[in-house]
Amino acid sequence: MAMAEKTLFIELFQPFAQYRNPFTFYYAQTYPLPPKSTIIGMLQNALNDWYGLERGIETWWDLKVSVHGGFESVFWNYQQLIKATKTGISLVRFRGKPTLWNQNLPLYGFPVTSQRSPVLQQELFNGWIYLLLKGEESLLNEIKEALKQPRKVLSLGRSEDVVFVRRVEFTEGTEKTAREVAIRYPTYVAASIEMLRKKEYPTYAIPVKVIFKNDGKPVRHKAEINTNTFRDVEFKSVIYVGAWTFLKFKEKVRLEEYSIEGKTLKVVTDGSASGWL
Image (cartoon, rainbow, N blue to C red):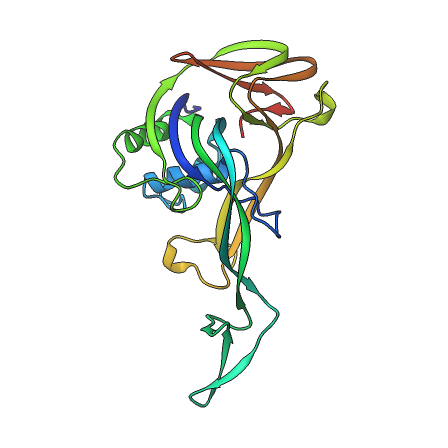
């Protein structure tokens, strides 16, 4: 017997954020909204289920997520970051033993060296994030209770990017069809380019699933992470639909419309086009 599915609405306020796009190298670009993997990580942290093994890894990643919202502004932060590199190794002798050094700092593994470099980092300021989660009612109930009374400071993205939970409640959507979907709050949609009538949307490859593995087996605890741990990441191509924009399709598509206290969130649910990640 299939488990009952529900939809949970979560409203967050986030003063600062940086959702690192790993495909940028000479500067640190941020995704405009948090990707699914980042959101799931925050929820696992809230329930003290860091790697998802307590409730089942696939139970977490089968959770459907639709993210909406935006930030007041984008700014650039010039800072020094420590990067790892396999080149530029220098050896000096310390107490009679060869020791790796870089910029007068000891290194923490061979042959990886550290490099402290000034980097432009793109950051977001003053954001409102609206999340829709669809999945098993039992898991959503746990998430709801954990967010209503958090046992710790929650973050979304970097550890310093704290979030404040404004609202968390169950909601129901209304099914509709349309060729033009009016988007008020920016969102991600995984859509085939052939379906779109208008194609001038930014495109991103966002991480939707991340599992840390040792010798092919999922990590069970932070203490198990070492230099040989493999970060298995699954990416999905999405378009980013900005505020007050029409998402235009060649044919009518199905969508779900959620209204919560004057906020209307629209999630496309049509085959190869979906706002559920």
